[in-house]
Image (tube, rainbow, N blue to C red; front, side, top):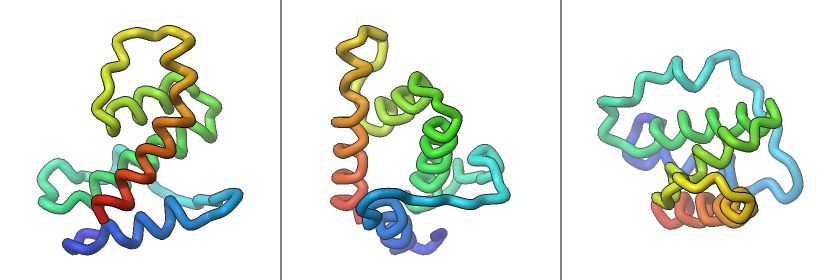
Length: 101
């Protein structure tokens, strides 16, 4: 993952499953120190782990915030319409992830 092409491994993990993805980890996203990483892979992995944790904890607001941050769309408005964009943003995140890789 820390190598320049490490994002490809994350892409396979995040986008190839047709129905479900099972993730087992012994670390929390905050345990990954990626602030000084020059590659996108470790940073995207941390965000992916945050998103998976939010979904696992049925925390829709946190999941939306993560997707909004990754998509660059402002989340200032907490309207129902914005929350309905969650599925779209998830698809956009995966599409953008593939494009980067």
